[in-house]
Structures are given as C-alpha cells and as structure tokens.
Image (cartoon, rainbow, N blue to C red):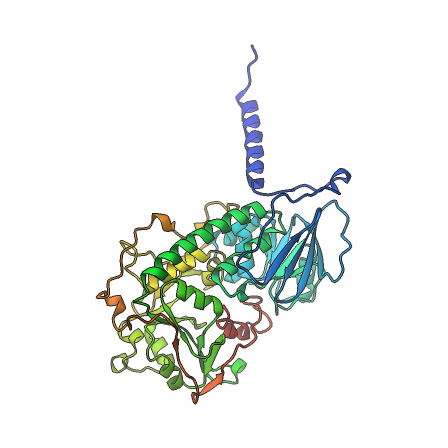
Length: 483
C-alpha cells in the first residue's frame, strides 16, 4: 500500500486548482492558442457576433482573420490569428494579431467593456487612471496595470508600442497608429447600440461567445423593461430635460452658457422609460447664452437631469441656473423637487461611473431611468444605481479598490431581472405626476426662434475622458452633447 504525504497531496491539489482556474478563465473564449501550419486554411471562428442594434461598427469573419470597422471614422482593422500569415487586405488602418495578449485603453468605457468580457488580465496600461471607478480596475491599477505616463509623450509612445492593441476614441491625441484602434460607442444613437459595442471589443480577444451571451441577456432585459414602461404610461408621461451649466473659463472665452442635450440615445432611453423628451432643436444640443432663455425653455419640464461637470449642491445648481429664490418660480421640476444628477457612483478621485458601466449595461440604465421617471412603478420602489435626487440631497456612493472581491472576474450587470420585478399600475394621483399633462405622448417641442442661443446644432465632440493632458476641460464641456 502506497502512502501519499500531505505535502505531496497539497502540491497535487494546488496544481489541479491552477489547471481548473486556467480552464475557467478560458471558458467562452475561442482559439486562445496560435495556429499551426495545419490550421492555416481552416475556418477558425465557429462562434461569430452579429451586429443588430449598433450602426457604427461591423465585423466580417474570414477563415483566419476578421475585418472590423469603425464606421464613424471609416477606420478598418484586420485582426488575424497569431501564427497565421498577415492577410493581403488593402486600405487597412491597423493589422492586429489576435487574441490580444496585452491591451491599453485611453477611455473609461473601453476599459469597462474589457472588464465586462472578463479579459482585464490582458490590460497592461490605462489612460485617465484617476477617473476609473470600477473597484477591480482600481485594484489592478495598484499592482498590475500601469497608468500611462501622460506627462511624457515619449514614454507614452513606448508604453503603447508594448501592447498588442491600444483602444482610443476619435479625437484622442495619439501619434502612434500601428496598433491604435478607435471606437465610437459613445456616438451610437441608442442605448442598446452603445452596449452592443461589447462585440466590437470581444473580436480582439476571441471572446465572441461571452459577448453574445452578455448582450443577449442585456437586450432581453431591456426589451422587457421597455415593454412594461412604454405601454403602461401612455397617459402619464413626464417631460424630461437633460441640462448642464458651464461656468466662464479660458476655454469658453470666459462666457458662461447653459445647455439642453438631445442626444439620440437619450431620446430613445426617455421614450422607452415611459416619458417624453424636451426637444429644442431636433439636433444634439442647444446652448443658451443667457439663463433666462434657458429657463424659458424649461418652463414646462417635469424632470431635469443635470450633467454639469461640476460638483455642487442643489442650492448652487439653482444659483447657476439663475434661480435665486425657488419659492418664487413655478417650474414643475423645481416645485416638485425633481432635479437629478447621474453622479451617485464615484471614485475617491471624483471619477463618475456614468462614463463606464451605463455604456456597457443598457438594461441597467433603462431600469435606473424608469425609477426616476416613475418612482412607484415597481412594488417597494426601485433602488437607484446612477441617478440621485439632488433636490433631496441623496447621498453619493464612493467606490474604492477595497470593494473589489475578484480582480479577474467578469463585471456583472447591475440590472435586476425584469421578469422577477413586481410592476404596479400607474396611479394618476401619485405625487410623482403632479402637474404632468395627461394623454401627451409626443416630445415637448420648444421653439427656440428668437432665443439667446450660441448654437442650435451638434458640436463636434472629442474623446470623452480621453486624456487629462491637452485640454480635458474642452473635452468634458462638449461631452454632454452626445454622451
């Protein structure tokens, strides 16, 4: 009879556990190894991603490579399996060997998609590191991921060259083009379209199975929530306005302005939540040169969602909006204390999760907005995620690295399952609908003719949170137009 020592058994079990962990981390990934000469002519990608909602990217699968396009920038990327020959494809912006074994991201949304796929162990560098809110990405930044040395252009170039792929956004300052990939998820016209960009990022890691599964769940949950809210509230649809204020700075000629955003995805989101949108121009945003003109446009608004890039309280917001005494105005959003900000979840450095998770998880975003628009639609109330009522001084949740449980786990969708929620019929006498015009289903259109405006059409926006260097203030001042 053989006797196995405890030490030997421990070594065996340890090795077994490592093997099991390795297998688990590869679950949902295809072709994690480089191809051999025998595989070069075979169809390698049995699992493919089909684009259904997004309009700004495409993926075309070949036997040993993929052609991925960012249609917004008309950029083409050829992703070829490592070990295979580089394909002969013309007019290509970058050839990327896949699966990517080291990646860098300049935007917080790109980092979030990578974490949602569970391949963050491949992230080597991150830009705008102080803005990262994800607890586990913060944890990885402590020991594993290196922030870009943004104050040193030469160092940044060297860091970028060490990666298989560098994800950036259109407008991001980047002299290196050999492995840079631009993504335009923030320009998509629908919330589901933005979230479907998980398939774009998955293509670089051969993680199509994970992306497809994740997005199918998000899509089904979103459509369930939309079906419940948009059908139940045909008669009671509050008017929502997405607003912001920009204080005078050297970047806006020391001239304050007030803005109402009408980004396409926000329109769809508001409609799907069972509400109406304030439409001032039919374009992406209207910028007013006076608070009076701005407030005139908000006269019949029921809910204001403030996206100003400042950290202030309700009293300061009213002051910035030109309201010195709220008791002397009759705006429904003021009298009913329905002023919100999407800043409930923050990092210790003040970064907002609003630029991370809501992009990847459209169903959670819709659920959160339904809770704002129809707070008593779900039995027992709906637990807020990103939106907080500034007028009621709702608290902020600060996320730190210590909140991370597993650095390498796939980021979970924060949405609740629609099928498990107990929805209630709308009650017209509910205080949430005080002043809401019944039987109105179309947008509230405000004619800006004669108003004091700076512009009435979309202004070009550069990469959101793309870099702290080189004029971030300009970037964030324009961001709310399309974000």
